[in-house]
Length: 296
Length: 297
Image (cartoon, rainbow over all chains, first blue to last red; front, side, top):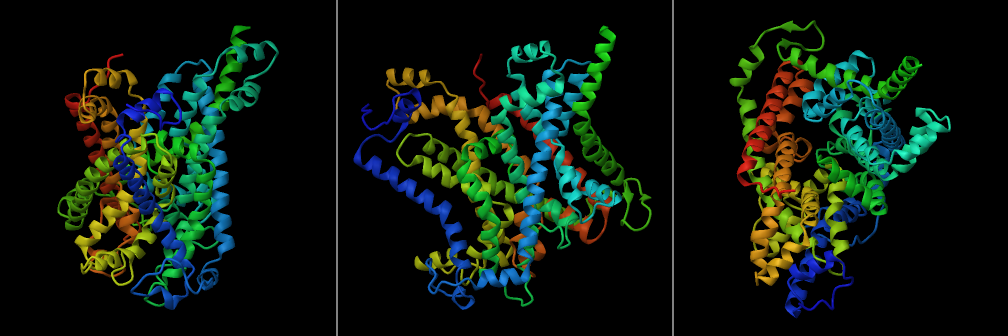
């Protein structure tokens, strides 16, 4: 098979050449056609959201949809700012996602360190307990966690949104795998130099595990930023409301008709940070989602 | 000396483990036990819980709303899982080729995975709008009068399945891609020397060696979709027939817990779902021996 069109000659590209439609003109044409179709199908709904958000209300309800808004209008964003306290909601979402992510990484990393880098009796039993909790579907936990948070007096507070998210069996598992792969030599040398466990954790293990920490961080941030079910029940007041919950309330407007340009404006604002983050740090997003086996 | 160091070490173990372990006990172990206990109680959050034995489970058996929710959940799964399973595989095989621009396709197919279910639900709710949505406009261009989509139960299910496939296909493809990249090149070379066609290579090399991944994908999809919630909660048009009729198990749990304040009954329902998921996982694990081919080490 002719390989002149492949860019590099490693094994992956050789295999790619073997299984591709081939180098015929029609094959290439079909492939590029398919690529265009896929990109359009995946991106068009997002473009349509953006386009709708930039139209004045009377131009939304057109039987012939226009992708490029004409006239361009930001009235939906102004209306949105009147309906919800954007600054507040935005801050809440960021605060919860960032503090929650940082906390989850720290808590998981500490436990992972105890499981991967220390020898103690009962370690494996405790770790099996961690693994077992990964099997529990989240729906079984929503009601009792809600009751617990209520008993603790955390309703409508950041605590309700952040603290239950700090523990993650998955995060502990992921980081333990990574910590296990580090060589022992550094540690032994550090002990000889009089370092304690914390120094080793903080100065050696964490810096050497940045890829795993980034993977967990991105996965955790995404989960907290996108969360809906849990915040819907524990953070309903404006002071602590996060973006997804605020966004979902927009549908039930004062008038029975949904103002779609405003709903789409809210969607743009809610999805933009995560999309930008994804485009900048694609690799970690992909790894985070794939290694979890849980959808975001 | 050794004893002192031993004690020292236990202090360190406690130090590293305490935050995580207290979280595990307080936010996982205690809730799961209390929800088990709650399933045998009547509790409206205001008065004291009242022990009712198996009454919640007995009520569940005769609860038409629960059976309807279960039926809708199974219908969703029956439509969604085969679709996304096959389309995801096709997409993965396509993405696995090296060609200019393929990275952009991969980036694009993963965009909906990153977006939240709330945003995705709202975007597609607008796209499925019967009068002004893109879908019915497209149908009209080819001379079809589009249905009322999110107003009617049956078409609402189709709309939600399409939305779910759109959101998840990139994720499923990525799971497959991991498996595809683990297949050794030598098999394909041997097949080529033997004169195997591309289809034969796919049928006799790729698919058997990919079966562990397929198995993992199938389990993950089933477990995830028995717990589907957001799209069903957000997409049907308010006060329409679809809104009144289409419920899945989790939305039924949520309604009982937070709209009717029936914490005990909702807990019982969530335990039934838990057991259901457990049984499916178990059956899958048993069945996999029949069709999953594990490469010997």
